[in-house]
Length: 509
Image (spheres, rainbow, N blue to C red):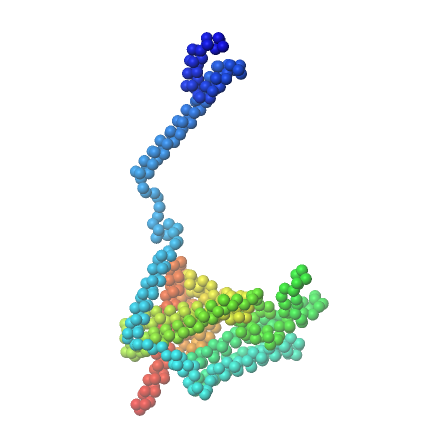
């Protein structure tokens, strides 16, 4: 106790120094006597911790000062290196607002045109007139009868294939019979449409379209069955079991799907499934969807009915008056008025074409595919992004494109023909069928559709060579918007002159 009192002042001085060094040493000094630790050791430890705390404190303060200085610099500067959003180098791609603006402007401009049309012509939509376009005489139905008669050619193709499968016909005889059958498919409806007076142009287009589709389907049916016979003959040397009956695939003891093999596919059920399926290319085993989605089916049915009525209304209310008013400029050869009529017709015609595309390739074909559980629903691709004319024709009608590649383009290449000649041949065949579906129902040959399709060849070369990207896409859209009205006006003018002006001259005489 006495020692503690004697050293009191010294202890107080040391405590003061210890306090200046750190609070932890002060707490330790209060118990230093019991532990026997030297005061100098505590003093050195406290100094080290004090230095660390000073460093931390100075670092924190310097960080705050730096933050204040950075904040000050930010106040002084507000610019950085960057591109404008509409520049291609900016990488900006979200133009949704501009797209919405375009849609609003399109709706407003067309609403004005539609209102102007109603004020000028009144309501021209007449459902009864639609029936008269298909039937001239209510007691004569040539177009439906012609469609029903097409079953004869389908059954003939099945009979020929059955005879070929059992070896009753040779390949040469089978080819000759198929050629005759396919030729009659193209020629028979032409004779009926041309010589039956009660056949209307619209009814003729409908009947010829059905026969054209049947021609392409039966051609594919013939080719695929021929390939199956060739495969069977090649495997006959190595396989011991027969391939004449359906094969059932199994996995873990469960039946997955019946796989039909040749000639087990030569049945009425298989043939008519293919005829009604939304495809032009035949297969022995089509991809099938697991079930029929009723809601999806009803949506497509509603779209079919709605867009069909919309198409009829737009044609009667908008296109027909515009075409009729275009006859006088054509007769007077007033080129400025002709161009004005052409541009005026381009808007409704293109809108109707777009609606028809959605109605047929999306609503109708998906409805049929869902009803038949047909699995391949790729009826079109992104043709609206086409930067070349070739890309457009390859992607806007996938069933026809697949048929052309499989049954026309590749067989020509295998015979040694170069690609350019083969592509030209494909365009030539397409031009033939376009003219076939227009000139024969109108009962006149002007070759406007044929020349329009053949003009796609130099147009495809020009666009592919000199225009790329958005410029190429714009050229494709312009050709679609302007090209079709030109052909429509030319055909309507020639049809009007041929059927109405001649009849008026005959009445005057």
